[in-house]
Image 1 (cartoon, each protein chain N blue to C red):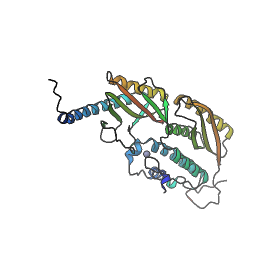
Image 2: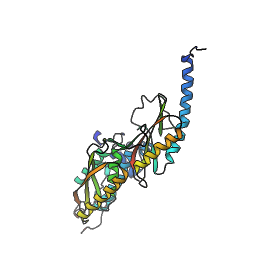
Image 3: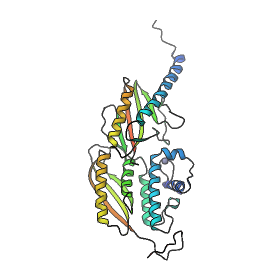
Image 4: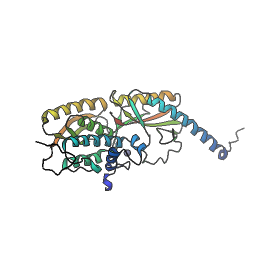
Length: 202
Length: 122
Ligand SMILES: [Zn+2]
């Protein structure tokens, strides 16, 4: 594993992935108290569920996807699993400073997208100056969708749900939510080498 | 008498007494923060990989990472906490309520409360 795989807290997606499989990690107390590791685990769990559903390959093995779409999602996870910028919240007292981390909001966006059936979130970004109250913010979300799910409806439903969630959970001024379906995921070719999955695929 | 105290001898004792006070206070404040509806978890106030240099009077509650950091800054008590918020209530409102609850608990002592929401949702 190269160092770019490592989150700011020092853990890597590979370690988190191994933790999901084996329950073993050097520093379990850290993982329980690290929001980035928690968000990483939630995403990896979702990816491996989707992968088991879809693919013959072991998806999140060692934190490295074997398919391009999986690789792209993991690359985005590495980038986004960090506290990021501090987003100010209005406080009731001038002496107080209240914040949301950018990482908490991108993880929230990711969890909303991942909750849709047959959907995996890739890029989940906030564009614009989130550190200035009232600044115009654009949300960019990329999703991979399992073949057979209606994509237009899927994107519209997700846009609506994200708009509602972000209106409640943040004070950001959201100008637009841009959703791109980057991949349509299909079951593997039946001729793929024998693996864990032995079911016949049409 | 206006004779100044022997600062060299008195300072260590009063500093450790103040620090013990802050320790008790930090524990109380942890309870205050945890009891705000919508707070699902309290994370170490200082991310573990960051240095705590400068926080001379910072106090650790419990054995391991400090969940509430208290620093006396020229008579104003700086309180720092990082929280996770569930989806049952809006995170900004929960953050404000946490700050107000901490401030109320500390009255009449002046305080500056710093609340970071580091996780939203389940
Ligand atoms: Zn971590």
